[in-house]
Length: 112
Length: 122
Image 1 (tube, chains in turn yellow, blue):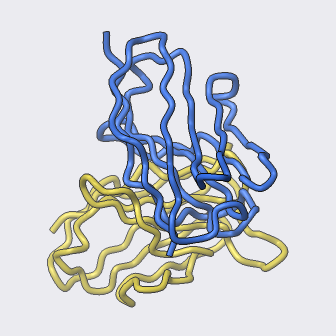
Image 2 (image 1 turned 120 degrees about the vertical axis):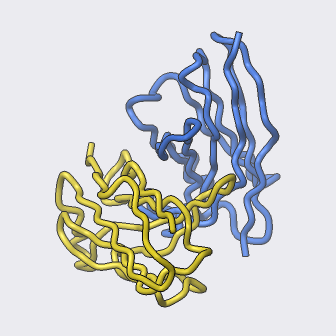
Image 3 (image 1 turned 90 degrees about the vertical axis):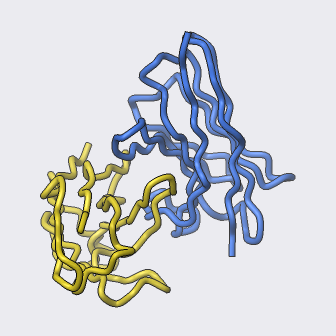
């Protein structure tokens, strides 16, 4: 199984400041047919299911604010929130969909 | 815009089984993988398996092999997840989620159902 490791486990950032979350995979998740990385980022608020923010490591889901961006390749990936808003308080998860079983990082709790 | 609506919370005894439903509306059902995931209280997300409704093809994670059955009823656009031999470790919120990449299992998940809390307690 591919192990996904996020850092940090929790993060406190001031409003308007940048937040950066890292995700490392235990093996390469590059999908050869399209040369894109099989990595997604989700946001989960208390009592709600996760919602996808980013897929293919850097493609933003429709309707997601452009302050959210994803980058990285191979085994190291980053989610960046450029200017933290109050509504961004949540737990963030990365997920690899390169091979089953599809695995998630342990989550990063983002607070103000 | 497809929407997934799950059945309500369940309380089960150890050793029993639970069957959770996930009804799709507002979009195509048969040609997208329906996945099941779970999240124990205060913990992270775990993928359990999925099904391609049009073919009935399933893919289960090894951890739950032999204990989980995922099925669909195309006539009602409903997917089911049945988990047997329950223990307290199975107490979790169970989610269904559609794969975005059609009949490819290798996909991110969107949308998700609202979740079903299954509590296993004697």
